[in-house]
Image (cartoon, rainbow, N blue to C red; front, side):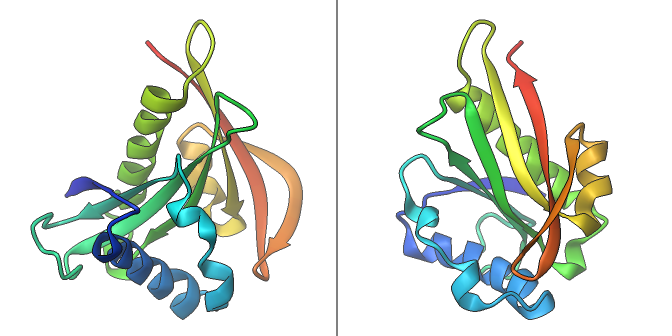
Length: 162
């Protein structure tokens, strides 16, 4: 398993990310395609990561999961994790954890602020994934809300550079 950082300006690489997201969110969870795609994929400060079994396979057949990190220009030191998706065949293999570690490393390296350098990582978690995020150290909010007709709760984790 390898983590590959995807250049959002590369249409072929971004297509690999979208293929996983459409398979998981649209195909499995019934999210509408127009809700899945947004203009944030190519916004400056957006980072995409991909976990693959074969980084040299440009077809995407070996790709296992993807996630996105959004910088918050209005709030330096705050980032948002979004679009965490792992293919069904790759679940329970640690892919989600690998994705989150990669995003947290990017968050600390590129978006930390203050002294000591810290970054607040925020996300909107589907309720079915709450145990996963809690196990990674995220504090889960109590308010639930519907997003794309799926129940979610906010979660947050503050990271400090060592």
